[in-house]
Image (cartoon, rainbow, N blue to C red; front, side, top):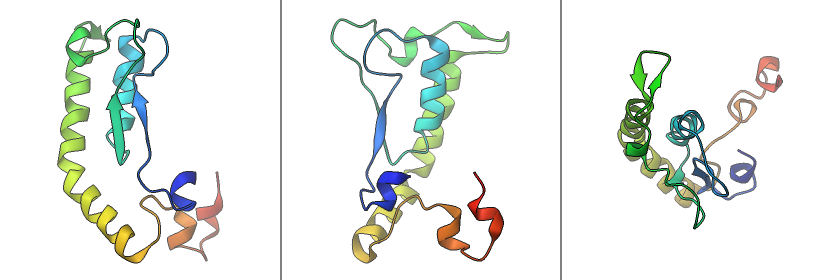
Length: 115
């Protein structure tokens, strides 16, 4: 959010991490949060263990595989992509931020300044 406030709207992260090996748990969590970044990609350093979604077929708490969690996050990202493109276009045309803190939209609400 800090980059957006500073006028750099297209930011994100190398989901699953970049340096070193990752775990199925960490990668699934990165994909889940990465769905809500305007830019995210699975990218890691040479020599690190592969971290592609199909490498994580272990089961999460006896319910679903990490691969299914990642797949759901990817579907969420794809469902939001039109919204992201529209918002990026509006930011480009009108300025502002892609992600805005609540106090930008609700400056008179004291709860918008908490945490």
